[in-house]
Image (cartoon, rainbow, N blue to C red; front, side, top):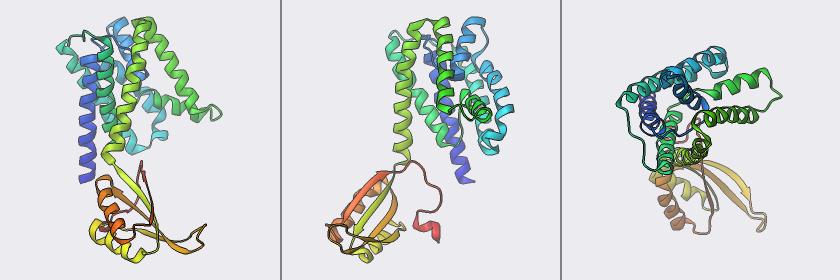
Amino acid sequence: MKQTIKEYIMMILGCILFSLSITAILIPSNIGVGGATGIATSLNKLFGIKVGLCTILINIPLFIFGYKLLGKKFSIRTGFIVFLSSFMIDYLNTYNFKPFDDTLLASIFCGILFGAGVALIFMGGGSTGGLDISAKIINNKIPSLPLSNILLIEDILVYLLVAYVFGINSVLYAFILSFARTKIMDLIQEGVSSTKQCIIICEKDAELVDAIRIRLQRGVTLLEAKGGYSNTNKKFIYLVIQKNQLGLLKSIIREIEPSAFTTVSPVTDIVGKYRQEDYT
């Protein structure tokens, strides 16, 4: 229950940032964007349809046809995100935000807010819906057509619509927004989780394992290893730690076996038990 509450808090915060990026920067500055949001803002410009309402109308048929592909939990969370963000976009739009004087600056900051919001939504286990769902539906019907190609075709069609409605400059600024959004999403998803996997090839395995268990409160996996050059038997220690524990781990290795061969790399996701308390 605590984990679920935490995830929904992240998704709600993500919705706030995502909605603000659209209403406070994207719409007033006439900046283009891909996906369902790009279609919604274009239709808003052409026909005056509310952006949030249009987003819901785009997503409803996608959810109907793609429910089985998405799964119950993901569908519920994504539906929650779509309806909440759509409501917030239309509500915040009533404040009539003024456009930025510098469109380039607006594109960068919009990308930062947009990316931060979407990253939090993803970390909460949801998504903003849209054309990703339609791409999965098409790929399911036509497996020979790669998902990446479908997404590319969808993006091209949306950007053609954006260019027609807002002008070619809007599309160029959209590329800047997209770049900033992607970088911020990567930074938040890698930085907040900040989990590292460590491999230690050593001889004093018993001392290292005890120190890691007591001082880091982490479990380890121990395997047999053999040096290819030295032809000596060694131990292979594998463990997962938080980024802020890396300094202490290095200190432990320096104290016990400075010559131990150690590698550290980021972890994008974890399923299962990796902390000592998970086993108690």
